[in-house]
Image (cartoon, rainbow, N blue to C red; front, top):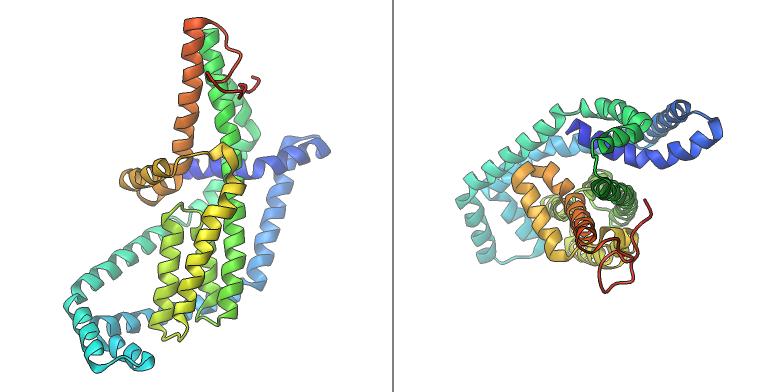
Length: 331
C-alpha cells in the first residue's frame, strides 16, 4: 500500500519537479524545493483552517455516542417526528423499527469504528509515502529502463515501451483529474453547506472533498454521512440538502468529470462499475480506489497487444487499430 500511494504521489508531483528541474539544473534540488513548498502549504492551511475543523470534529465525536443511543432506543424517531409534524402512528412505526433493528445498528456502528481505527493505525503512511515518492521521482526513469532492458526481442520491447508510455500518460492524467475533482468538490461542499448552515459544515465538507478520491463509493458514502448527520441533528432543511447532493452528483459525473478525465480514461460505465465492485471484493477501499486506473491499464494492454499481434501476422502497421484513424504514439 505504501509503495502504491508513493507512486501516485510521485505522479502528482512529477510535473512540478520536471519544470523546476530545468530552472535549478538538478532534479534532487528540484525535489527538495517542491517538498519544502508542500510542507509550508500544509502548515499554513492547518494553521488557519485546521483548528476550526478539529474543534468541530471533536464536538461531533463527543455527540456520536449519545446520538447512537437515541437511535437504538428509538427516541430519535419521536424527536424528529415532533420537529417534522409526524402523526403519532408514524412516530410509533419509526420507533418500533429502530428498536427492532437495534442490534443491526450496533453492529454497523462497531464496523464503522473498526474501519476508522484501522485507518488511524496507518497514519504512518503520511510520513513514509513522501519518502518513498522521493526515490521514484529521482530514479523512476532508470527503473523503467532496467525493466525494459530484460526484453531482448525488438517487437516485444516496442510492445513493453508502448504499454509503459501509455500507462504513464494515463496515470499522470488520472492523478491530476482526481486532484481537480476533489478540490472542486471540497470548495462546493464547504460553500453550500456553510450557506445552508448545516451542523459541522467544515468537517462534513472536508470529508466530502477527501472521499471524492474514492470512485463511486466515496461520494455515495459522503452524501449519506451528510444527510445522516443533518437528520440526527434535527436540521430543518435536510430535503434541500438531499436535492443539492443529487444535483451536484449529476453535474459532477456527467458534465465536469467527463471534461476533466477526457478520452485518456475512456471506460464504459459498466466496466467502471465492474472494476469498483471487483476491487472492493479483492482489496477493500484500496481496491476501489485503484479500480479505475487498473481497468484503464487493462484497456491499454489490450490495445497494445492488438497492435503487437497484428505486426507479427502482417508486418508494421500504419494505424493504431484497423478501421480507425488513430495513430500509435511515437516511441
